[in-house]
Length: 161
Image 1 (cartoon, rainbow, N blue to C red):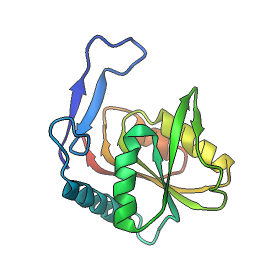
Image 2 (image 1 turned 180 degrees about the horizontal axis):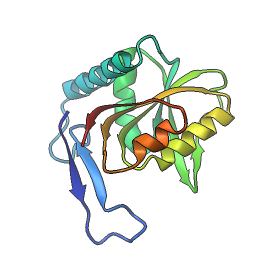
Image 3 (image 1 turned 45 degrees about the horizontal axis):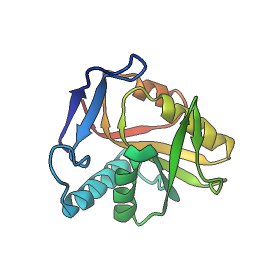
Image 4 (image 1 turned 30 degrees about the horizontal axis):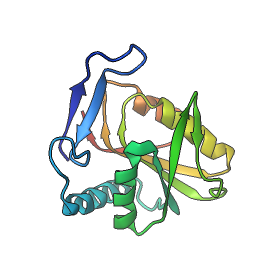
């Protein structure tokens, strides 16, 4: 999985200056369909190696950046998925059909983990069993891993920067 950090300039102070770019973004070059299949299989394989025997009933992609990796994993794993949308101030719009379900959150990158931690809390409030977070890239300069793991949820990243 190819990935790199991109430094944005001229952003307002409340926006992070760093962004992770990866081969499924389509930023550097077009994404060939087979890359989606390979990425989904790589992600799903990483999850099964990281948490053997822990198989979710449903995947949840978080925000626009989580759509592509979530669909890729859904195809590779043969699992259904939902999408959830951050609304700001710690609120996340998600389906209310997750009560009692084993849920795996899928995202493209983890840097700070604020949205993920809020989302994990919201899912638990809906009585979902959050079995983990699966991402393409973890930026280890951020606090994402410690923030996610402080909720008691495992974080599996295919690549770290």
